Amino acid sequence: MRLAGKTAIVTGGGSGFGAGIARKFAAEGAHVFVVDINSDAASIIADEVGGTAVTCDVSNALSVGALAETVLSNGPLDILVNNAGVTHLPSAMEDVTEADFDRVFNVNMKSVFLLARAFVPHFKERKTGVILNVASTAGVSPRPRLNWYNASKGWMITATKTMAVELAPDGIRVNAINPVAGDTPLLKTFMGEDTPEMRAKFLSTIPIGRFSTPEDMGNAACFLCSDEASMITGVAMEVDGGRCI
Image 1 (spheres, one colour):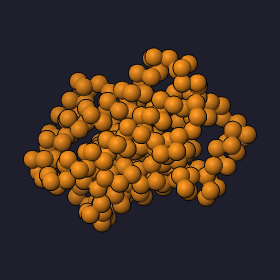
Image 2 (cartoon, rainbow, N blue to C red):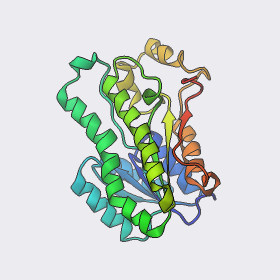
Image 3 (tube, helix red, strand yellow):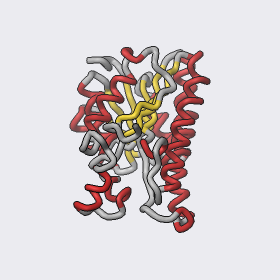
Image 4 (cartoon, one colour):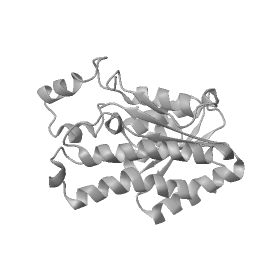
């Protein structure tokens, strides 16, 4: 029960890695606000883990403001997990539409700014708090034809480090995890097409020989957000089966 008595937000918590993190946090004693733009998905996971579902578009300032009001009216927040993310289909960088670029920018990057603006003052007031950003191996060892997604995750890694160094004097830790491709709803989008041949191509770049799982991310996230990691801030932990070696 490493998170007993803690309250956590997990954005994008209705599926994939976010659902895995929500399940692990709840199993370790946390009350989890499962935040997702998909109300039904958030409710399913929240019901499963005994948490609270909140519908939120994390790229929208008004929606994030409403989330903060809902969460903080129920008591203090201890952990914020910025997991929500999207990608664009594999494409030459100049062929990605402006609409797709804006969506990647807003969900993967702007959301981190909006959620920090909403919750960092609360953490500073309490002189404690943990922020975990779910970045990607794409920000370290980018694959071709996913240029703007790669760039957004590189941005997130840099944001993690600068947030960590700025917020450390206030007792706030900020870390990231870098998942490798996982069998989640985003996998088909990364690959462009979900075929045995395309899966084999992606798996060939992962030395450990398998895709990552939501459970893998939940375990790593739980450690970094627990008191066991009280001396760890500003790291971007690769949870990637050796992909970035």
